[in-house]
Length: 429
Image 1 (tube, helix red, strand yellow):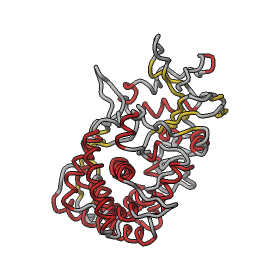
Image 2 (image 1 turned 90 degrees about the vertical axis):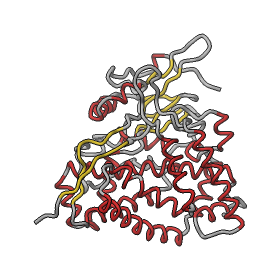
Image 3 (image 1 turned 45 degrees about the vertical axis):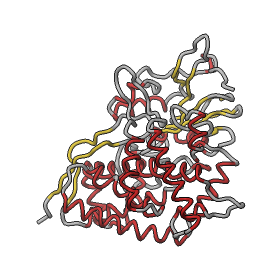
Image 4 (image 1 turned 180 degrees about the vertical axis):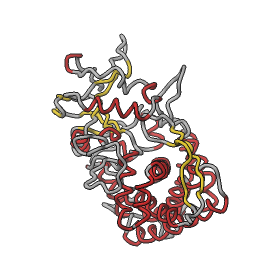
């Protein structure tokens, strides 16, 4: 049962330029949005934002924003208080969508989340991960070879998207004749990620593109049935034949996991790769440092790219029990949004947080989540992909650089890049 929003006396008034519930806020230049988050971090307690005013038939709908590093980490590690169900995205997935497609792992809590995550974690065997690391290096080399030979105009489509898509398809064991269709379905499922202006302005709706997701689910169900009969050693075979407490992934769970891996895994890694090229172009000293000793600086560079760009901006939680955090007493039914993009710029944790510094240490960024049971399962895979690709890019004689600013989608959910022009510089004399 939804609990009405708390009385105004329990809310913190936010600066007028920082209305995180207003779609137009997410159309502001990124620098202006970061300044607004900096102002919110100075407040004594979390600010409240109204998404929908109260009517005679419906209570007011709104949320509290957690913008500080310590508060986001604390909430992330208290799933018994700050629950992921019924959904972590805005808006929350409708019940009929969850019934039709199954629950996504990101929207689950214990014990169902614990059980499903155990099945998935056990499927990532040492052998499978070792083969994936080798494949990542091969894919990176092939992607860069094709880029140099074909000289495309857009870095996102030709490099940043292709790299994680091929890696995940290879890992899962997706047949080649399915891949073109899956790529199109993924694009269709995420093409409306931005905030649109004018009449009908809305925030990202993860429910759009349901037909694309339905088609992917059907394809996964067919592949799952085939791999149960004839396993091939890939991730699908491991998932459907796993025996963890007598359970493997059924058709709906396999479809939900694949959708999460393709739409979230491909998209977030693609965005991190694209932002990395922009950041290294804008900071030639950091690029030169990375190129001078790649093995020494690569891990730090990936962490700093993820911190600085924060591919996933926020996730939502629902309060289950009364709990005091950040100077505020939360009540059951309150909605809370964890803003990783703000926490990753928290001046109390990161010195000179707007600077891009690949030697930053320590770097406790929250780009893969704030810890707890929902820490990103694919973080290792994403790190390896980014490192392998930039090892290839920086090792070639032609220097790649971004041209102009990336075309950002203006999303309130992810730091999504639609396109980025790029060019090659001739070899140094």
